[in-house]
Image (cartoon, rainbow, N blue to C red; front, side, top):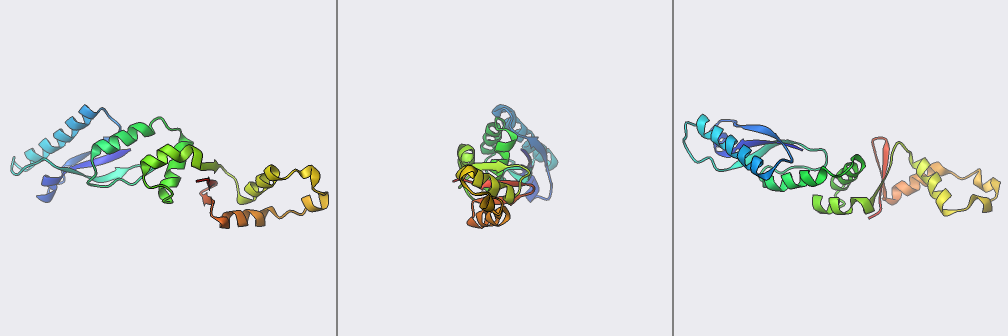
Amino acid sequence: MRVYITDLEAYNNGYLVGRWVDLPMNDDLLAECVENILQEGRDTCNHQHFHEEYFITDFECEYMTIEEYSPLGKYNHIAEDMEGIDEDGVKAIKFLMENNLVKDIFEAMKTYEDSVRIYENQSMEDIAYDYIQECYSFENIPDIIANNIDYEKIGRDLEIEGSYYKIDNDIYEYIG
């Protein structure tokens, strides 16, 4: 997660004073970084006005949207928690957030392992085939029926049901 922190007072006076900050970082170091940006704003504006507030004017984050006036500490702690999550976990959290299946990032981080299954590089036809394999014993189904199962249509019906989402080359199943 990267955020661009801007001195609000300098910005309101026509100056763009700020810098990119990579999160997470030590809380004291983050506070020092913000103070340096505000001091740079004071210097740019010839020490006029009060330079006490900042806002986030840009961000780079693959799993959530960052609001410009939210506290930096909140995002710093989220970034810290996300460091321990593997790539599939990040994809699952991003999926939950982008599809509004959770109320916030905290719920997404808490529930992603139990609520999302990712099938990489698979089609809905593959999902349907696996579903039939799991639910029914092919030994008990006559060949004439087993050989004529329309996995494509079953896959389409599973997708319409609303639990499966196709994103890029992956299928996400929302278990809830």
